[in-house]
Figure 1 (cartoon, helix red, strand yellow):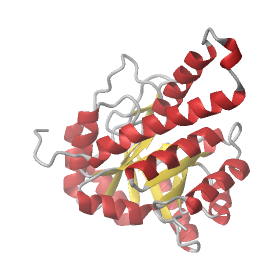
Figure 2 (cartoon, one colour; figure 1 turned 180 degrees about the horizontal axis):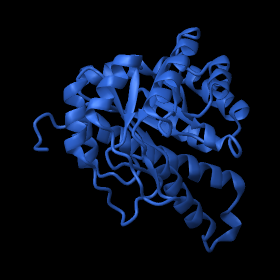
Figure 3 (cartoon, one colour; figure 1 turned 45 degrees about the horizontal axis):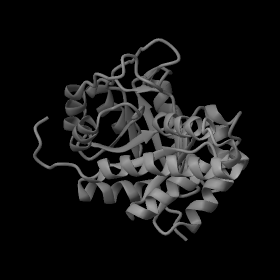
Amino acid sequence: MSLTNMISIMDQCRKQGKGCGSFSTYSMEEVMGAILAAEETKTPVILQLAEARFVTAPLEYMGAMMLAAAKDAEVPIAVHLDHGKTLDSVEKSLKMGFTSVMIDGSAEPFDENVKLTNETIELAREYHADVEAELGVVGRSEDEYTVTYTRPEDAKAFIDATHVDALAVGIGNLHGNYPGGTPHLRLDILQKIHNVIPDQHLVLHGGSGISDADFQKCIRNGVTKININTAILNNMLKAAEEYLSDDEKNKIDFYGLNRVLVASACQTVKHHIEVFNMVPLHAED
């Protein structure tokens, strides 16, 4: 049984100077591909499901699949609720067996975010689960590109008030595809945050589109967990398009498409695992 807690994986990554990949899985093919990549690289990973996707990836279906895959995996796997908005969704996930949850109070005033986070921590501890929170607002490509950068002094106050296990920060990172293709990360802000809370596990959302070099700079400056979603989906769509446009139509079937999608998800996850595992210790930031 390889289902484990998020923090146990993150603690091990921190000791080894590596980053931990947290991969969004909204289909069977993504779950299979992520587990295959983790096993082939012998690397623990986190599978995550966001509350916003419950409409097309219901918690009851996807959560059960993720948990079953984690328990059967050859390497430790954590199962995580991403961007939980309410205590109700948090509790449902915990009752299913999720080993960590994120409560996203980043759009709320600071004090409300602290209150919601502490309520989540109290609930999660009943299930021996870990908690992630967010401070500063990570932008979204489907809206305008707006980010509220996390202030280092606020990060310190937030950790002092909650002692949350992991903290997602806003440094110019964005959910979805980045306008112009290349994000401008405020690594100076990340360095300052890391300096004031050096022992805190930090989380980078919106990992798709960030360069391998910037990933590694973030890891050297306190980021332990990195979320990947859009890169997996984009590559799966590309693989599906190529498969379905094959001139030899008699070779196209649903089962072949399934194999192509699993292989694409595996390839994308494996690439990010290898990047997160190979962080130069003395590269110039």
